[in-house]
Every structure is written in C-alpha cells, then in structure tokens.
Amino acid sequence: MAEAPRMPIESGCPDPIQYMHPTMRRNYGQWVYHDRPRSGVLHHTSKNNEEVWTVRCGTARQMDVYTIRKLADIADEFADGFVRFTMRSNVEYMVADGAKVEPLIVALIEAGFPVGGTGPSVAMISHTQGWLHCDIPGTDASGIVKSLMDELHEEFTREEMPNRVHMTTSCCQINCGGQGDIALNIQHTKPPKINHDLVANVCERPTVVARCPVAAIRPAMVNGKPTLEVDEKKCICCGACFPPCPPMQINDPEHSKIALWIGGKNSNARSKPSFHKLVASNLPNNPPRWPEVGAVVKNILSVYKDDARDWERMGEWVDRIGWPAFFEKTGLPFTKFHINDWKGARHELNSSAYIRF
Ligand code: SF4
Ligand code: SF4
Image 1 (cartoon, helix red, strand yellow):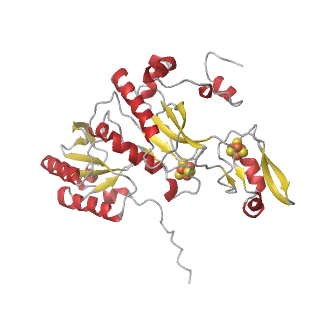
Image 2 (cartoon, rainbow, N blue to C red):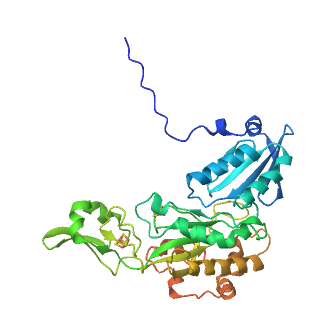
Image 3 (cartoon, protein in one colour):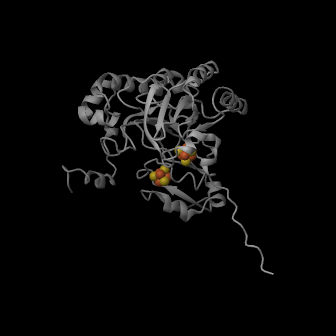
C-alpha cells in the first residue's frame, strides 16, 4: 500500500482573512474611500455602503503579558473583539458601529494608550529588534523609541505636522532598519578590538575576511595561534565583521555613538523614494533616556513643522530649501564628516547629473 504523502508543516504567517473583522471580510477589495473623522481614527466606506471605523493607539512595543491581556480585554468590551498589530507597534481596533468609537477611545486613553498616529502626525517610531532578539546590537533601539515617544506623544495624538513623519531606529550599522524621515542609527567610531585567543575557536576566518567591504581584514598569527588583524587605516568601523566573528568586538560603551539621518522615505507619493542623509553624528549613546538624541530630534521636528509647506515630507522640504538652509535653520553644525569621502562614493556621485568621472 502506498504511503500517505507527507504533508507540509505550515509554520509561516497564517492566512489573515480568518482574523479579519466580518465587515472587512465581506467587503474585501470593495472599499471606495476613507476619511479621518479625528486623529487616530480611520473611517472606510465600501461599495456596498458598509462602514468600518479603525481606532489606532500607540504601545511601547515590548509589552508584558498583562498589557497584552488588557489590550485584548478592551477589544472584547469596547470593540467587536477584533484587534491587529501594525508594523509600527500600534494596535488597531475595528468597529462597524460609529457609536462605539468614542467609548473605545475613552477606554484606551484611561488605560494609558495614546490614540493617534494617523495622517500628518509623528507616527510611532519603527525600530529594530535590539537586545531581545539579536546578538549584535550596539544600543537598545526599543529604549530609545520608548523614551523619545514619551516626549513626542502629543505629536502622535494630533495631526499638526506638514505631512506624516516616519522615524526609524536601528541598533547596528549594517543590517535591518529602514529609510526614515528621521533615522536614529548606531554609529561605531573605532575599529573592532580583537580577542586573539578566541578567533581560531569561534570564527571561520575566510568568511570574516570576505565580509569586510574595504578589505581591511587579513589572516595573521599572534602568539603562535591563527587569528585576524585589521588595517585600521582602511577600516570604516561598519561592524560587518562582528556578527560572523564575535571576538572582533566593536560595540563599545563610550565609542559606539548615535547618528541622526533625515529625509528618507519609501513611498512614491509626489516624489520618488529617497535615502536618508547624515545630519548629526557622535551623539552619546546614553541610556536610559538618551536626552541628547531627544533634543536634536525635537529641534529638527520643530523647524520642519514651522518651515515646511503642507504635504512636504522631510526630504522634500530639504530638497526645496537646500542643505545649507537646513543646517542654518536647525543650528546643527556642518562638519567634514558630512562629506561622503569614501572611495566607493564615486559611484554615487556618478548618479548626479552634475559631476561625472
Ligand atoms: S539593526 Fe542590527 S543589531 Fe539591531 S536587530 Fe537588526 S541586525 Fe540586530
Ligand atoms: S568594522 Fe567593517 S571595515 Fe572595519 S574591519 Fe570590520 S568589516 Fe572591515
């Protein structure tokens, strides 16, 4: 007798349709327009004249089980029992009756969850995994986000920015993270310190040598043991050698700093997607509240809020006024470190219509 075929084990993302609010399931692909009756609320109307209201609230993302239960209880009592988490760590409740919106908002605010994050507001900051899930972070991305949003949450609850502000935080220089209107990224400022006793036991040396983008790593012998050495004149302190070879320690409590980049965006609306650019570097990586980083971010946000035109994203605003005006208006120092002098930058300069090599 033929054996029954082995069935695949489905361990990926489950089918989301089963978790959707019934009104959304019935009207899947049928929505004709939406509006925002107030900050934090989206109201969608379908071709079938059915409506759904989505109420968005912010969270600290790293939540204990009691907080998640509280959010679920609010869904059961004040919404229709449906809840979803967004990629920016917001929680959204859907209701099919407009009369349920206000009591739901009151319940969320009383429980300590700010309602907002829609339209031209400062959206919740998206951040990388940090200490909880990754082995190479140089800072606690979630901690920076929590302390910054504690200070900015009023801008989350009202829609008073020229356009939406998407911020990102990244806890290493090379891996996950994304383009943001303002990005807060770790910045290593010293080459890795090598623990020669461990390299031969832990690291695939050819892999590490191949990993370096500027060919600064060479095989070496120290105290009769095979190890690696770094040409510090070439090293750009990117940290790419640390993940495959932890004995090449690059995280440093004093010399790992925070850098701020601005003007990135992923959307195609009005202008093409853009990479963010460095505007402030060497800010202290100063837990638990990172006050120096917070001060620079708030300064940039307030100048952008006053000076940008309606609908201008941060990068579009800088494109209009020019970088000299940006540094003048924000009072941030422009230093030699803002000039891209990496030899690979030749390719980037070649993407400009003005400079050709
Ligand atoms: S940004 Fe880097 S350190 Fe942070 S979670 Fe991603 S890979 Fe890990
Ligand atoms: S930090 Fe980056 S540039 Fe420096 S040695 Fe490691 S991989 Fe190479």
